[in-house]
Every structure is written in structure tokens, then in C-alpha cells.
Amino acid sequence: MLLLRNGTYIDWQTLEFKRTDIMVEPGANGGCLYAENLSQSPDFGGRAAGSEHSIDCTGKFITKSFANGHHHVYSALARGMPVPKKNPVNFGEILQYIWWNLDKALDLEMVRSSALVTAIACAKRGVTFVIDHHASPFAVEGSLETIAHAFDEVGVGHLLCYEISDRDGLEIAQKGLAETADYLSKRQGLVGLHASFTVGNETLKQAVQLATTTKSGIHIHVAEDKSDQEHCVEHYQQRVIGRLADAGVMQFPKTILAHCLHLDYHERGLVEGSAAWVVQNMESNLNNKVGFFNSAGLGRRIMIGTDGMHSDMLPSAKAAFFAGHNFDNINYSSTYDRLRNVHHYLNSNGIPGDGENNLVVLDYDPPTPMSAENFYGHFLFGIESSHISHVISQGRLIVEDGRVVTVDEKKVLEVSRKQARRLWQKMK
Image (tube, rainbow, N blue to C red; front, side, top):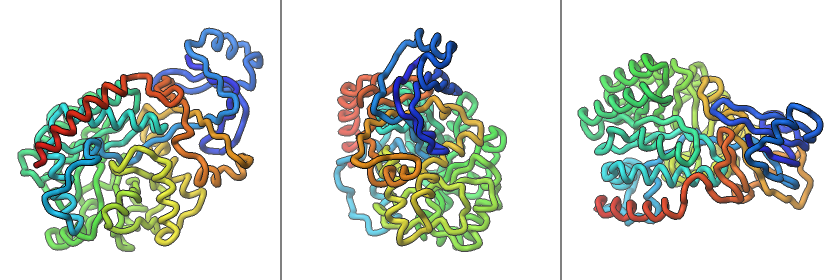
């Protein structure tokens, strides 16, 4: 048992503030016990006396930790890599000369390092659950379990998938399907697809069948660039959402549609009327110059992801808010709702690992008062991940005083730098 003493708890849903001690129960479905003081409840006091770890949170705020709706572990070793052979002039060339060049060079050692450094980065920024979309076409077999094991070591929850695609040939697409089926027989996860323009009808059909038999869902990039729509119309005589809907992708409440930038009015209606969830990735869209997210007509099932740009959910939420001023109908409360919608996605689908025993302790000493009435203003203009001092994941303390305590970060980074040099050399 972990005891947090004398903190101010902010309820992540009601935004109610209360001074309390918190007894954090361990486990994927663990909860929390609250008491204004230890003597208030004999049962609470007795259990508190036997706590393995006690943290004084005087002057600090405690609230639910964060979760990432769309991440890419495989991009972790890209930072500072050599420039591509050709300077990309459009989104297709960004994929061809950067990301598809990188993912083809990955082996399982590199994948493990990528997963470890991603999980550490997430943990230190208060992200205790990650929905990831992975690609390593020449190291498919065992890749998902490699990532899962690394995340488990750090103590970060996960919902993984492999990015199945025909772009490297049907044999590798079949390996992606086989890896997914094997992984889903042992762990929770999703059936990943890259995007409509790299997935043929037969692969799409098999992916939907696999999602059906495993009671899972599809995780796919949708209309991130106009070229996805253009390809779909040319080859399938319909737009992307129509194609996915006809194939059965939209029927699953676990389905995640990443990006959804270039959708028309009819497609937006299909999304809103379906069981699927949307995840926006504003910073990635800005980086790739593919367009701006607009929530109009998509409904309220909208989450936020980082798309592999980094592992910090707070700046991603703020980017959605600031860029959305000119391109979206977004305000203080809806920004916060999108940040927190990933918890509703996980909970409504019965996916364990994101219970109330996932918490962050904020050492945030603002120059102005903070309460439920003005919390959104502090959320958008004050609170940053640098204020996170402690992180609890599934009832387990994984970050203490800003330091990861589950793995040796220094050793992990030493190895990752070696793996990055190997990766960059192979990419040449």
C-alpha cells in the first residue's frame, strides 16, 4: 500500500478540490481510499499504519495521471538523426524518405531501446497509459511483446498494435496479421492498420475478421493527408470513411481513427454515428504541414495523442487549444475533455490499467489562487510536466521526486544511444 498524506486532491472529472490523505491500492483495477485525516476512519488508519511507502504531499496537488491516445514507440531513436537522402516536398515523401526508411532499419534490440526510452519519457511526464501504433517491417515477429515487456519494466500501462500494411509486400502484411493474432491471444491490444492507401482489400478484410474474433478493434491513420482520399477515390471509387465503414472497421467501440483531417460532411456524419473514436495529433499535423484538425460533425468521442512527436500530453493539449482558435470550435473545457477522453475510451471498453490508482503529484505553487472555478486557466496557462514530482501507476510508485525508480535510466540511455547509432548507420 502507498499512502499520500496531506495533499489537495483534484477530482479529474468534477474538478472538486479537497484536502485529504489517500490510500492507493495496487493492481490493474485498484482504487483509492480517501480520508481528511488518518484518525477519521479506524479502517483507513489501520491500513495506513501498515503502508509500505508514505509520501508527504503538503502544499502539493494530486490528480489522475494522463494517458496518450496515439503514440509511435518506433520513432524514439529519430531525434537528431541524419538528414534524409532527399529533402521531402510533400507528405508522401516524408513517409518514404524518413519514417519508412527508419522503420525498415529497426531490429528487436532497437525496438526494445525505443520502448524503454518512450516508457521512461512517459512516466516522467505523468503519462501512465499509452495506446501505441508500431511498425518494424523487417522485425515483425515478437515486436509487440518486446514493447510490452519494456513498458511493464518501467511500469506504464499499454494498449499496443502492429501497423499492418501492404506497402512492403503481402508477405510482410501477413506477418503483421500473424504477430497481431499471436499477441492478442496473450495480451490486450488492437488490430493496427497503417492507412487506407497502403492497405488492400484482402488485408483490410482479414484485419476486420481478426478484430471480430479477438473482440478488439482497429487502430488506423485516417485522411492525415489529402493524398489518402485521392488514392481511395482513384482505386476504390469512394472516400476513406466510406471504405472503412463498408469493411466493418467502424462497428467496433475499440476502433481508433487517428488524425481525420480531410473528411467531408458525409464522412463526419458516418464517424459521429459509428462506435469509433477519433484521436487528434495537432503538433504532428503542424510538423508535417498536412492541415489542421476540425472537430465539426465528428461528435464528442475525441481524444488527444502525440503521434510519436514526444511523450508529454500537456503541451499536446495546449497545441490543440491554441491552433484550434483559428480552425476548430474549441474552448477551455473542451480542451480538457479531449485530454481526459482517453480514460473514458479505456473504461467504456473494459480495458484495465487506467484505474483511479493512477495519479500524479504536482509541486505547483501558483502566483494566483487555484480552485475548481478557475482550474482550466491554470491547466492551460500554468501547469506543466515540470511540476510533476511523483507518479503512481496502477498503485505503484514509478517516479519519485522527478526520478524514475523502476529502471536504471542512465543505463537505458547509454544503450539507446548505441542503438540509435546502429539505426542511423543502417538507414544510410
